[in-house]
Length: 469
Image: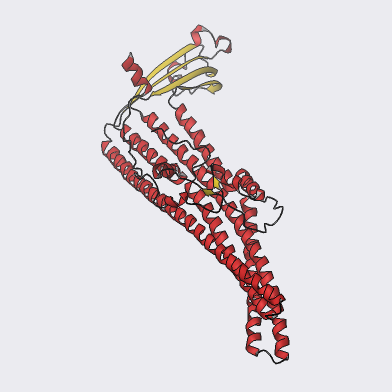
């Protein structure tokens, strides 16, 4: 009885189960810098890092994008389709049946069967109505696991689409934050350019008066006017960049209302620690999708191997058939059929051999794709780690330079108020301060974007559960 049950439920599993390699290191090569003090707050829960920024509007836009973004909607629909397909494939392992009823009016040929033989018999009715009610069922017994392999392939495809959905959500969150901070940086740069332009205009007027008084050379005026023209040429470029990022946010959030333009680069939190490479990389959506493709490939090899074995099916029909509607449900109108079907491709093994070889060849390619995904994921994480840590150093040095120039500018202001230097020297000191503020802005935007990229590189998706050890 136990053997029969095992055969009927398809407990036999045929086909490969690929053992996937995982990184063996205890930490990423560039992860040491995460333990060093940094100038932004650390984040405990990296799943929703945007909630820990100092900008509520940024958090609102990211949350809105995750709800309405059309790329996410499309990815969700693909997952829903794959999930429905799993249910359909799983249902094929159970008996299927249907019920039907019909009433057919027909005139029989006197030259065919049975008219040619009994057409002359007294009482023979050439015209008649046939009433039929029946229920039929069939069941393919999964002796060697063909249907089980199809189910495994469908589940692996569902896992792949789920990983891809997580990947799209992670990308949209990162792209929305990146567009917002880039827009904020452009607006902040516009403000710096306007202040630089105001100082340049003052310098032009001052030098013009000195030139008229004969105390300045024409070359000095040309230099100042050239600087003013450079700022006038730079301003439209930055305005174009700001508008492009604003429009990008509209696309990412599917037309969300932007309540106000950001005027300063928000602070993006940093990762304070990172799990081992094996945990981080296998949690990444791209690696999970590649792993699911390997599982699906294994299942397809199993399906190809199943063709070497016979398939068995059971079928049956019960119903009633009569030419007299009044007698349709009588015992004499009852009919029943039973069927045992066997299918075995005994003379098709050469074709099956080719199908198995093709499935194994595709599996080799899929496995190479997994290994490539693992390498590319490692590269992405290491690059993001190194960039995030290096940008911290860049910000600290830029702020140190800014502090020095600020002190020098305050000294120039006091010296000017004491009458020891003229206005041009004081304005030039102000100009140097604005230049170093621009460098500080460049460092801060690079830092913010590098942290966003690091979250994107190490995120797994809010619903991801690591595999059991």
